[in-house]
Amino acid sequence: MFGTIRKHQTWLWAVIITLTVISFVVYFSPYSRMNAGYGRQSGGLGSINGQKVTEQMYRDALKEWDLHTFMHSGHWLDQDKKRNNQETEQQVYQWMLIIQKLEQYGIHVSDADTAEMARQMLLQAFGREASPQMFIQRALVPRGYGAADLERYVRHFVGLNELIKTVGVSGSLVTPQEAQQVYEREHQELATKAVFFPTTNHLASVVATPDQISAFYSNRLAVYAIPERVVVDYVKFNVTNFLPQAQTELSTNLNEAVESTYQQMGTNGVPGAKTPEEAKAKIREQLVRRQALMNAAGKAKEFYQTLSSMEPPRAENLRIVASSNGVPVSVTAPFDAQEGPKDLEVPAEFSKVAFSLSPDEPFSQPIAAPDGIYVIALNKRLPREIPPLEEVRARVVADYKHGQAMSLARQAAASFYQTGTNALAQGKSFTNITAEANVKPVELPPFSLTTQRLPEVEDKINVTQLKQAGFSTPPGKMSQPLQANDGFFVLYVKEKLPLDQAKMQADLPGFVNTVRRGRQQEAFDEWLRRESEHGLRDTPIFQRPPPNLGSAASKS
Image 1 (tube, rainbow, N blue to C red):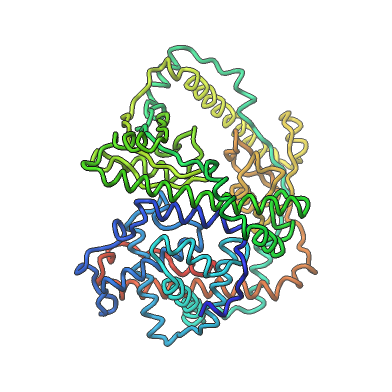
Image 2 (cartoon, rainbow, N blue to C red; image 1 turned 180 degrees about the vertical axis):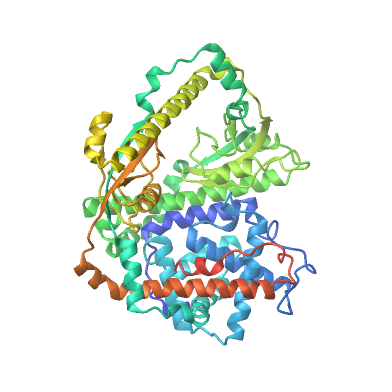
């Protein structure tokens, strides 16, 4: 099937390093064993609409949802710190329900449609067209997946989109008149002015006595607590040490690979390159660096195999193996799970692995980073502690003063709002009101409900908050005081601006389709909710509210 997708003679430069690092992290990470966290023991998988869920069905669905997550977010399931096993299990069961429904509705996807969707997915995921063969070899094979897993997922994904069209057909019944009303509501722009009350106006007037600081600190001990930290020993296989070897290994075909890649991408496709020579030099550098990372990974794997063969497993074995191999051992400064080591250029996976180490499992498999491959061992854990006031006094004083300044800014905004609202009711203009209050209004750029960015004011106001304030305030009125990025603001809505009729008429045909798709999605989501309540009642997740898979599927 994948043969129907146009192939390239060489890999796209923009994808090379991304996939290399991804594959190393996945291959070496102890979290890559998907069954050790997301899988269930056989016999406890339940049934979907009376069909028994087998271990193979669950495993295949788990792989597909893992692929879905990667295609739409850029990370695998086990690389999401916010995700929990329960959420994943819910999504896997609902994915199995969808697969079952594809069969019931007779939705079968052709090889050509599957291949085209695979091409589009890789294009969206990596920004440039990449061959499935490369993706399979560099990203999937190290994870234990293959071409069959990718094809099965893509085929089901295309089928899901057909299922959405089938069961959501009622939502597509949108008339042009209805769509125009939605368009007018979403594209109506407002003319507004804002008055800001920043905390900086009040900081100088805040007095912080020793007793106030002491009380403030005592009431916020949890804020100043130092979280649990770890210290790890590590051996680093620096990519720079492997560059000469990589250069030699690639010398025969390197020029051809560089030229072929450049012909596909051009100068504009290589960030920072201004001339063909610069572009080719950067391509050459990345090709060599990729090979060097692979060589470093090979050495790291050999090191780890020796380390893991020693019994009993002890953290100090890292130093023994390092000494016998003539490689240095370094020690990190203490770091917490959220921030990670500040002196190393490592991915979040490094901290995740470090905090999983224990006396029983004291060292890690190799971890890939942009500058090399790491093998780490637990040195020590530092428990959570509360620092004495004197150690954090400067921070406590700054926090106290900022809090007091925020309170004063809130009072100033509330006072202006009260005075201004009364003055508007008496017929005074907003200009005169601000002049009498000795505050300076800021005229904001026009915005609508569809506005995503307002660069002129984003350093002061959250755009979503601004839209909520604007469209909940009638023209000629002021909003209640709202918190800004640093202080508070009051928004005055001057008027609704007239719509550009010519633009609306030009946009409407496409907008009608957008509204129809949205309504169709809503109808499908409701259908899927009902089907889940019935079809998944004999599964382990029945007591938990199922997640919305339809909306996630519609992103592609």
